[in-house]
Length: 87
Image 1 (cartoon, rainbow, N blue to C red):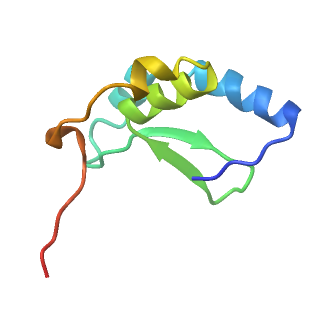
Image 2 (tube, rainbow, N blue to C red):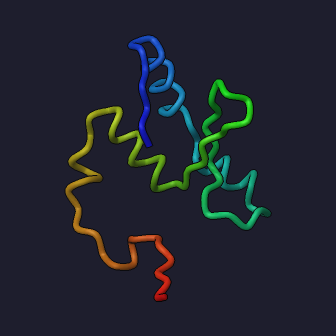
Image 3 (cartoon, helix red, strand yellow):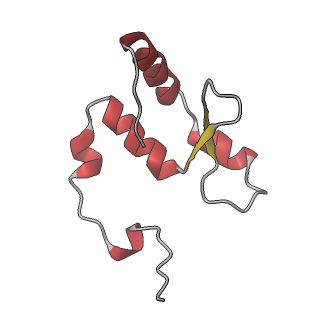
């Protein structure tokens, strides 16, 4: 994803992301069978960005400059959520 913000827009986005309660949204959408249940609305009416708990944590780390805690860990094969299809 590519985000382009003015300084004011970035500060608003940052405040919003830091206030996201992942547990609330996961409970609210627990009856829906999707992997990403945490919404971030946009100014475009028909566009809502959906994230899972790990993605929200990484986004929070990115905007608070706490990247080392999240990004310097070695990934295990099980950490990669990808459906591999052999053709």
